[in-house]
Length: 163
Image 1 (cartoon, one colour):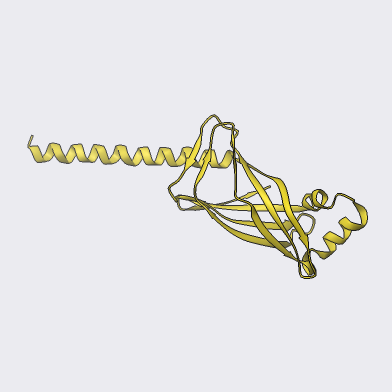
Image 2 (cartoon, rainbow, N blue to C red):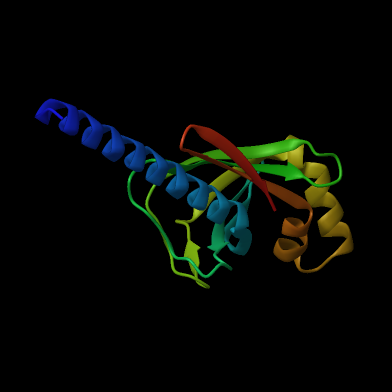
């Protein structure tokens, strides 16, 4: 066999191995992201004005798997958080996140930077009024009436996680 033939065969083997490695890693990463759990850990700076209801939402991502997730490449980004009213499924607010550095050890959690949202008072007014009339713990009960969607984009796909 010629030397050029051996180099061509060797290059082909390396290329096929590299492609299969990347596909395997991509599948593992997709499975890991699918298993992540998200929750609102707390609400701070709850503010009511004549124009809007403003608050900072502290979001956590929990990793229940045995694998650590470390992303600092820009391939995967938490792009947007949307807030809905649970009963009517009406969009109340959204905010752009653009978070692409995530480090979650196995069994651990990642705390996103506080996410500031403003819900227009006309939109969220009825919800807030119901909470004021019936409940004393406004913040906790108000947040129970909300549903959240986190949009994650990575590896050519977008995924919506509802919590």
